[in-house]
Amino acid sequence: MKLNTITNRYIFKEMFVPFCINIFIFAFLFLMTEMLKIANWIVNYNLSLWAVFTLIFYTMPMFLTFIIPMSVMLAILLTFLRLSSDNEIVAIKSCGLSIYGLLPPVLLFAVIGFILTLFLTLYAGPRAKASLEEMSLKVATTNMDIGLKERTFNDTFKDVMLYVNKIDVHNKKLIDVFIEDKRQEDIVSTVIAPEGRLISEPEKYTYHLILSNGTIHQTNPKKRSANSIQFNTYTLSLNFKEQFDEAANRKIGREEMGDAELRRYIDELAGKDEEAFLKSKMELHRRYSLPTKPR
Image 1 (cartoon, rainbow, N blue to C red):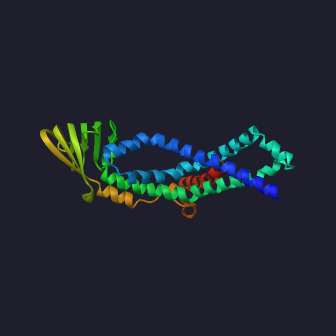
Image 2: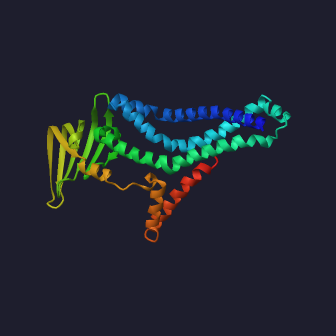
Image 3: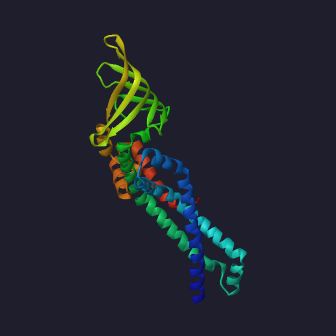
């Protein structure tokens, strides 16, 4: 009995070390894929290190859901490969222990991995995703230029379509700007400028887009009129207070709900919205199946 206990502790310890190494390596690989984006945030957009680390922290549970099962499987495989190559399994069997006597530490290790993954899928993952949405919203209020992409139509602001051909992050300039503004009733304003700058006032929930040497084309379909205006400097103010309030007061999605919340949500949908009901059931089953799914 004492020999069994010593052997179990030894095998468990041998699995724990490669498990930690696997977690570190897989997490490092994840960070490497995001490193360029993170460096860009810090260098070009002055995003604080604390904000970056917070975003990474909230993102990790979603990846750990897949990393932990893979690390458990590799840890067990590597441990027994090493025991076999060093003839330790032969030595253990020569002491009168059955090969099946090596299963208890393996099963315990697998169960611990299962519990950790189940905790992530049912509780930590949804909470982290909800916190990530809130954090992203806060970052966006002070760094809208992070969300701007070259050669992509941006419709973040209501009734305003923004297109930027190139973003010069070093000089803080927007090159070749195209804007379609429908905020005035019955008037569509199209603004074209070779360059511009974006200035934010987070406390007022406002961005000021200062354009240079461009043209404003205004059309009124009802009156069938059109006019064109040349300008040296033109300031377009964009208020995101409404979008901020909508995002802050939005209903949390299925993926952000805890286990109990999701079950209550499914009960409320029963007999009302069949499509949403089925999708919610699929999300619930996915959370329970991921920890048991072999990788």
